[in-house]
Image (cartoon, rainbow, N blue to C red; front, side):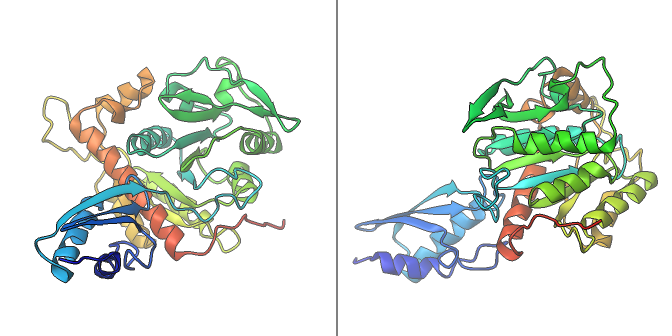
Length: 366
């Protein structure tokens, strides 16, 4: 049996990437083809380590080789990942960050920081490099969520400029006003001062190469939001809401802000937090105490992807209080909810990078 690398490539050119709707060869996702007798091996470069379709892609590759070359070939498909980006190395601010993802909500109390911390941990568990910037200058909670309230970032000099070294917690790089201001003191600043702090966090922090930098925004639509989109090209925004009507009404404003023509930041999708209550002693039961499917209805209204539901369970609250995000060691259902969320976010980032124009910094004339 004479098998060539060209024949392998031709067979794999019939395999379509399910999300991007192009074949693997055209997308340059095939690498390291090796042929040894009736044994064929190759590597598929996925768009993210959190890819939820990796086993489907693997099966389709094996089927394509068997169908187009020979059914008796022994096929080994190795999977690796290289997170896609439209901004990596193209901007003076955050040049080593592949994707900047804003996490926003219309109102406070919907669990945005809880979602941010668990999403970060779930992405990191999948193999991605992740950072979190706590942009809630007046009410920072990320240090508590990661158990580093007493953290004090060090400063190092790079090319004659002092740079802040982010705190590392469980492999995730973190910067927050909570590290710089005593917890018992209120930060009483006007908007321009808060905006300047965010600008310094973005430009004066020594971020390593990151696949995803999550920006935990304050509630509402404020100076901080405008400062972010003016300072750096944002890959996309994730909207967090709860099912009840008042939260959804405010979430609508959040979506509308990012979709304004002069801002035009892609909405990656909607997360419905506290979607239902499940008591620990009745893990199969779901009680929709805040209403049902509000987040899904919001995503349908704005034709944005629905990224997933997060239950209202004790382990998530305990994780935030104890400084270990619940996805790290909670019950199976809770862990699965956040892992599915991470997969869906990573998937939408990959689709956005493949199908939409290069991210641009927003220019707003006032």
